Image (cartoon, rainbow, N blue to C red):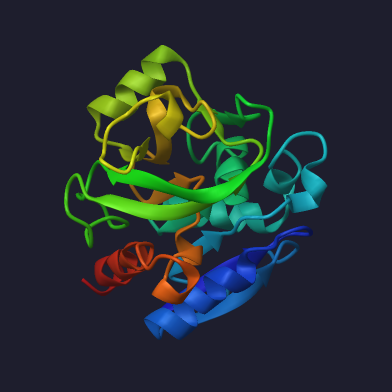
Amino acid sequence: MKFGIVTFPGSNCDYDAYHAVVDQLGEQAFYLWHKDTDLQGADVVILPGGFSYGDYLRCGAIARFSPIMEAVAAHAARGGPVLAICNGFQIACEAGLLPGALLRNASLKYVCEQRHLRVENVDSRFTSGYTAGQIVRIPIAHGEGRYVADGATLDRLEGDGRVVFRYVGAEGGSDERANPNGSLRDIAGILNDKRNVLGMMPHPERAVEPIVGSGDGLALFESIVGAVHA
């Protein structure tokens, strides 16, 4: 099983994703340059975090036009898994792979810290390794992570069970203090309508072993492997 990790100018979490896949999962991974035009046989695509193109203009707005994104979109249209993390989530929204947009944090401050998430739906290829309602601890690091969409889109995401991660407190409750960026309905991660593209602002690839503060992100990668091998 092969993971293709896209590197854009300004990506800085591609090595973390590689470490999670190769060193923790024992699966194959390779880097895809943003100017590539094919996925070189990748089964799973990761759009990693960072500051693609310096986040100039708007986060992800330039990266969505990279040559590799046409192949990523075709892969997603065929039902291939795409994991879009942080800046990757912003790129996926800009490219139309996911609905909504990511705006400046409500505080207008960059936030880098551990946060608690509640797993809202385990019926997906990204979350089957968790239990419903499980509280996990995953780091965030972003200045533009406030998820927004119109009311109809939010209702559709909720009704279809496509909100898979939500910001909560340590005990699992929702309140303003638990939401680090002002995301509508405390949304931290969503699926596309085919459920093969996951976008999330927290960084599961930085939480795959206790030595870095949490191993709660590993189940996400194990879920993907299980789904692809099934």
